[in-house]
Image 1: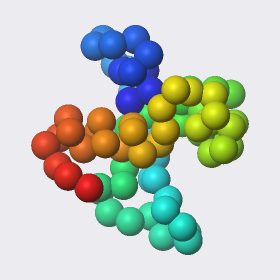
Image 2 (image 1 turned 180 degrees about the horizontal axis):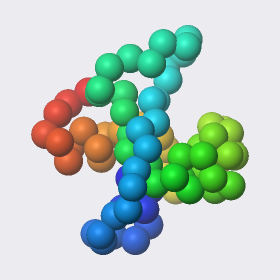
Image 3 (image 1 turned 60 degrees about the vertical axis):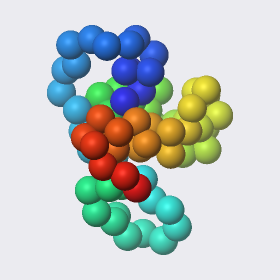
Length: 78
């Protein structure tokens, strides 16, 4: 979802699913999953590589924005 926002429509590679956590350690259901490329998930510029606060500060969108994008793509609502 980060790559889609940065590069626009393109032929994506493999993704990993990131759970948006909204307090607590529960992972929720599929409506909390954000597909991310490996770099943006656990790489140096990724959410787990940078940490959630640094990730949100580094990009002009939030994890919630990415989740909304993902849900819109699959026709679901939060």
